Length: 129
Image (cartoon, rainbow, N blue to C red; front, side, top):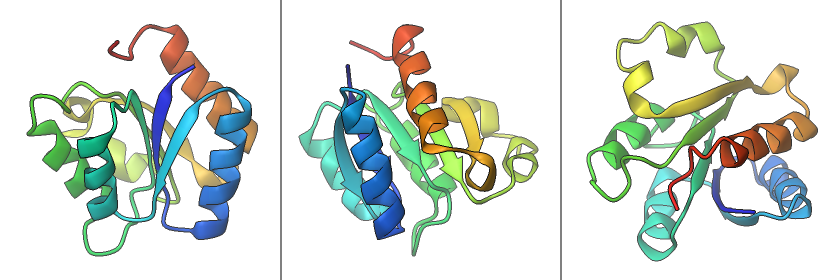
C-alpha cells in the first residue's frame, strides 16, 4: 500500500506495530527518535507518519513543527499514536495546522485499529503520490 515512517521509542511496541503494518502490505521504516526520523525522511519518500509524542530530547510536537517548516515534508499526513491524552494535544492552538489525520490513544487502541487508521488515510487519498 504505502511507505510509512513509524516513530516509536518503545522497541518492543515499535517492532509489533511495524510487523502489523507490514502484514497489511505497507513498507514501514521505524525510528525510536526524532533525529533518526528526520534522517529517514531525508532518504525515503515517506507517505504517512505514525508518531508517538513522548520522545527523548526532541518531543513529537516539536518534531511536527520542524517537519512542517520544510516544503517537501509539510503535507505528509500524520497519525498520532500516543500515551498522551488526546484532550491535552487537541486543545493546543496549532493542532489543526500540524496535519494530524487521526489521534489514537495507545491505552485504548489495538494494533488492528492502528492498521485500520493507516488504511483509511491511504484510501481517503490524503497521502500525496
